[in-house]
Every structure is written in C-alpha cells, then in structure tokens.
Length: 87
Image 1 (tube, rainbow, N blue to C red):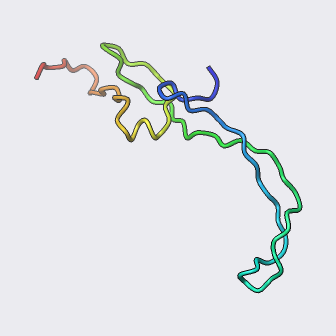
Image 2 (cartoon, rainbow, N blue to C red):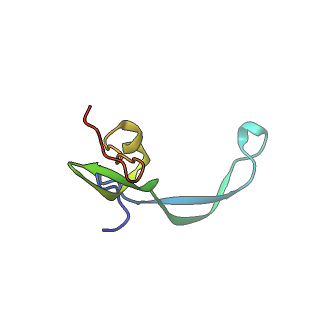
C-alpha cells in the first residue's frame, strides 16, 4: 500500500535541504556559503476519503490535486433511515 495516491500514483520523492551562512551579494555581502546538505522527503498531500466506485463507497488515499481536479467522486452521504429517491 505505502504512501501514494491511489489514482495518480504520486509518491514521496527525495530532495535536499541546504544550510547556508553569509549574506547575499545583492544585499551587500560577499556571497552565501553552503555549510551542510541533508536529505529529506517531499511527501504528497494525501487525504483518506470515501470515494464512490460504482454502487459501493470505499475509503481511498487520494492526493488533494486529484480531489480538486474532479478525478474522484466523493461518496453520497444522506440522512439515516431515509430511502433514496431516483431523480
């Protein structure tokens, strides 16, 4: 399963953070110096939501980009003890 979107396969990617000292040249300094590089992970913004798939509603891990783009359809929620009327 892992940490990934169930629809677009967006997964965590590796990146770096840079620790720097000094003042930028355009601000009047003599330049920035890198003092350390550390690996980090950029994680996708995943939400667990109930998604309508055919006649059933299932819980899926979906990234916010897919939710906003309308790739998934959220499950229909109605009041308990009511009968759904066809439109």
